[in-house]
Amino acid sequence: MRYYWLILGILGVWRISHLLYAEDGPWDLLVRIRRRVGAGFWGSLLDCFYCSSLWIAVPFAFLLGETWRERLLLWPALSAGAILLERVTLRHGRTPPAPFVEEQEGRDAVLRRQEGRTAHKNDE
Image (cartoon, rainbow, N blue to C red):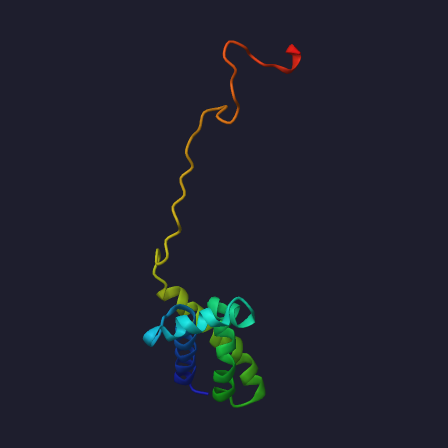
């Protein structure tokens, strides 16, 4: 196998995995597919770039490899190359986390105070 086939395989696995994982597609087609498959096996496959790249790499490895040993080694290698490419191209802050600010409350904001009297356990 020539090196350019390896590079083309990695790029192909990355492109299809990224399309299924992170893009809307024309006419929001992929968004509708992701909603339709729900939270089952197929939904979790489309929600995880690592998972989708692993399964997308199978046909690429089968087509690019010349022997069964080469195909078995290409399978995780193509997925790993796609994952590395995804990490390199990932823009930091693409999806910012929701801001969470915890307000400071008084020490005993939950407890009620009785005016003029201090309630202690030993006072009873």
